[in-house]
Image (cartoon, rainbow, N blue to C red; front, top):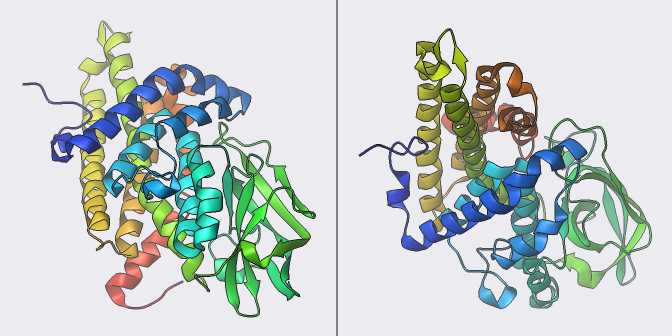
Length: 387
């Protein structure tokens, strides 16, 4: 029997029936609803927000949360497959789902009160309330402890001043999970879009994640009630815990982008005739694509094992860093090389590799640059912090 060129080690056979069903459902959605429009969305710099009700209807928002909060109670391997199939469509769509699920719904669930969970999570799972995550600031994304945004207690309320930068979903969001310095350490707050003094400004002129909303957030004496403070965590443990959740999904997402690029290169190279034979018949093209398949297979097995560790409660942040580093590097290299194999046709968004390559410039940078994750692994090996 011929092997699946996008899954040479039959990783799919290691998935449960439920995990396979989740992958199949999201794959159909990506094929039927995302791929026909996403190139145009990228060209126009437009996030396809008309797809949000369908994404929510499939149970993809907060998918791992308990049913009482609107979640589908899926395991983390299933969540990883959701990320993989969405990013096979476009990194911007996976980023939307990642932010909503891992960076907004997760902290409300993990660090919030029962009242906060019931107030926001069910409507977020339905896609009726959209969230964004405010941690990064313009002066130092890799050094969150250096944040300047601060919250001061004023009677029964908090007053927040500062700004955040590179915020996915910012101008779409109904609420923002914002992390600020306080006299008692870093704390998280749920800021609602109609709070006086809160504003979002969309970032324009992007060459990456064009089918995604990216914003700057500004807080000018924003008064936030105590009921909107996340009370069950203090310090960097809070936002870093959210980032570990999101980074886990990011280890899966780029696999989808890489598979999309391999698929396009395979099909194109079989049809494009040069010097009397298809490009696919040349040694150089076969060596390139064989190498991509090798790297995709390694990434698939790495993320699957990471997911099994996470579902068993054994996953460590260093393991997430290793997979985020490996899989983002794998995908961006494949996207660039696939663009090259397509020749001149590769520079247009009628083909996916250039779009994925540009998107992955962001994915390899956000939620921990490649260098940061290398240093996390280095610290684990040596016991010495080189940050």
